[in-house]
Image (cartoon, rainbow over all chains, first blue to last red; front, side, top):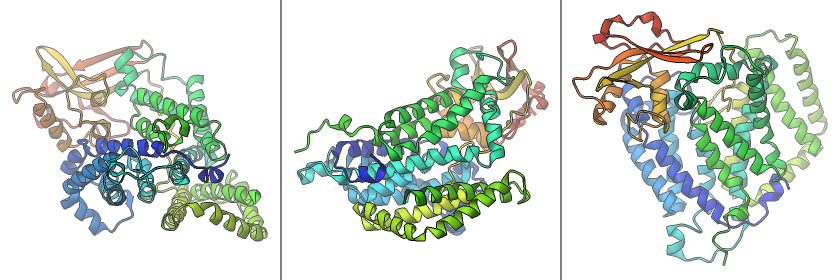
Amino acid sequence: MNFFNRMNLPSNPCQLAVFRILLGFYIIYAVTGSVFDLLLVIDRPLGVHVLMPKAVQNFIADYCILGLRISTVLFAFLLSLGLFTKYVTKILTVSFLLLFSFFYKHTDVPIHWLYCWFPLVVLSFSKPSDVLSLDSLIHKRSVENSTKYTWPRELILAWFVYIYFFAGISKILPLRKFLIWVNGETSRAIIYNRYLESPFHFIFGKPFFDYSEPSIIFLALSVFAVLLELSTVVMLFTRKYTVIVVTSLVLMHLFLYMCGVAGFMQTAFLLGICFLPNKWFDFKKSK
Amino acid sequence: MKNVLFQFFLLILVLSNVYQSVFKYHKNIFDKINTPLLIFSIILIISIFKERVALKKYGKFFKEKFSIVPQKLRYIVYTIAIVQFFCLMIGETYYPFADVGMFKWATRAHTNDKIYSKAFYYFKKDDEVKIINLRSEHTPFGNNLLGWRYNQDYTFSASYHNRGKKENFYFLKEALLDNHKINETDTIKIGVLTVDFFTKNVFFETFNDRTFKTERNIAKYYDELYIPEYLK
């Protein structure tokens, strides 16, 4: 069943609620990190583009970071609790986007914000707090399986596919890039250069083999990574391979984490929650 | 209908490639690799134009299928999609719209050197050398030098983009003091961690004060590690 048809299927609300709770906690984790303190101390922006007037960017950097961090954590916590969700999601989206404009401007890294901002927009227009929330305890509405719990997950899936599929495309087009990718040199560069700062080094203490020489292993890793990223597009057309694709992507990120490229595993797992079979989340029976 | 969708999809891919090839790589438009792709994209444009009736039907189909999504969100999603595809085509990120090209710049490993060295800070505690390998500190395998808030975002920024900055060094020192890992009297020095990929040996060389040679501090991609005044 394809993406369009799936949007019209009713589903139970718990899956979206679980995603809402985890997204809130994930944002708290991202925002409370010390990186913001470091970036404020250094305050040397990189030459990246932010779709915001320069004056606003400077104003945020000079006066608003502490306030934005506090408000983002507060609203993310309310999101997890599911209290005043209708308003909280909208304010949180704005607060999150403003705060991470500063982060991106100083790091040039697509972590956290790229994965989270679109789901936040979608949650702002959906009903993620009909169950497992304080709102549901206060209002005590009866909840039934509905399409209103399906389309937000499908839109988030489309976002996930977009991120990974085009990440795959960007590795193979223009074609001259593809040639360097498939010969495994990029994988080798990542593993070689990051070895001393990788969990593989911290755990095993020595390299498995000579990373200074080209190997079929690097070639296999590169091809596998590109194929896996491209394979995400299948999730738009059928649900059959979703668990396999999402699990493989999380495992790929786990491997990258072990090689010293951290940061993407949690986000892939977080968004992946939305695409798991809905029946796995049927722990609160619909009335 | 499916034909039009497929063509549209291909068109985005092809235009993305052509734009990046021609403008990003500053290559001639008649480059041997790009020319067939450019021709292909022109054929696609003509083909889509010819099937404009089908395209209209497709627009209707799209509207119908998305009717379940609230109208305001629908327009927001359309806008986001257009800007995202624009970013893809020009291969640039305009926050919060990204061209999602993680590791898109294919890199050749610049070296086949068997020896790879990198400078790190260290300090001594009870005569034991504690290497401040920041990237280990956000994992369960570190020396537990920093608190939980010093997550991978911090270690990444401190280890790579800002490793040559004086403020970064003093921020780290403050963090170690706050976590009671060093005292005011302790000195943070610089050592070199080396891996020999041929013998698979990994070893750490410590340097006393001024004996650290700056040529061992050459970084390949990011700045050299900041050397505190008292070590110069």
